[in-house]
Amino acid sequence: MKLSDFTIKNLAKSISGDTQTFPYLSGPRIIEFLSKYGLEDEYGSGFGTRWKYLEEKLMRLNGSQLIENVIEDALDPRRFHNTDKDYNTAAKEINEFLQFDNIELVKNGKFYKLTDLKGNIVEGSAVIALNDEFIQEQIQKCQEKIQREDYNGAITNARSLLESIFLAIIERDRNAEVKNDGDLIKQWKDVRKIMKMEADKESMPEFLIQIISGLTTSINGFAALSNNAGDRHANKFKTSKHHAKLAVNFAIALSDFLLESWDYQKRI
Image (tube, rainbow, N blue to C red; front, top):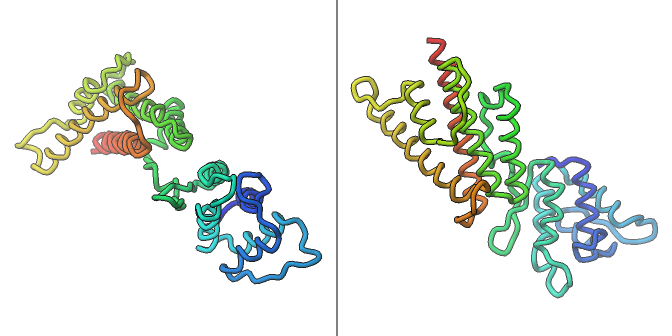
């Protein structure tokens, strides 16, 4: 894992206790903390600013597995025992700058583990390549809102993305502008017909029929989720991060598949 200089600098300030969120680490305590990572040193005159010293050592570990170990170790709840500091608050502070490196601390039981945010959201190449400002805005908002824990908002933007893709395909077929009536299921029926995705046992193998039927079932579930968990209506459902990620990844993956299928069908 390779972190930016910006992240390393802020990590050093946080872990040393200079931001008042982590327990304060004196010079000798910093040396003790780093000793398990092979960074042996002695505290004495000329030690310099504590966080600057820690920054220098973290730079040496950057790019190796050890930098991950340091971050996770710094958030060990036992380090916060019998202090007035809260390790959940400390994790939130670190995540504020880790996000710029597409990394996040995620709680697993009582401990925090690092996870790669780039692996959380599907990146659809066809969707990204589509030169549509509104669609790109929805993708960006989905990612940003999940990071900000606005899961209802992320689901709403995922629906807006899917509606935009459906309408784009319908308008391409009809060569005319179509008003968005908000009926996602009806739009999907139109798209399925345009894309020749109707279940036909004579021209389509059974496994493809099953996949298309599964997509229709998924669209129905997605529409229900966005109606009950999105921020357009009164929230009837306790939305969690994994629900939002499922909705966003489904919307992006299906959008990408439809756009690539459209281009393929026009070439043959």
